[in-house]
Image 1 (cartoon, rainbow, N blue to C red):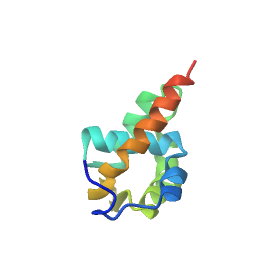
Image 2: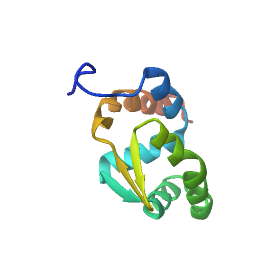
Image 3: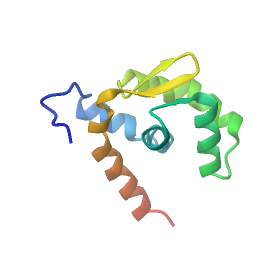
Image 4: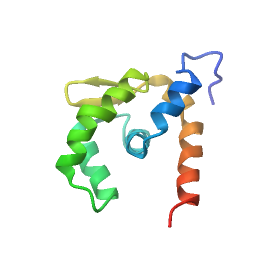
Length: 109
């Protein structure tokens, strides 16, 4: 596992702000498990499948206009055209992502 002193990671406040959205966490999880690079339509399809009451077109619009720009601004992903790529240092974000996912699973009902 990389240490924080040898990689360029976002500040904790940026990480927490970015991971505050479950939709952004789902994007990161998809990229970690099925990436490191996916298209926006693929991400929208996979996320809408996970959230069965969600319309894929709406997810696509939210990703495009809100969530992906926030992830890009945080330095967690790069976007080129319709392709979203996990940045190299994103593995340092995974402990934060796991913590948020664990919290979500404990409070789901």
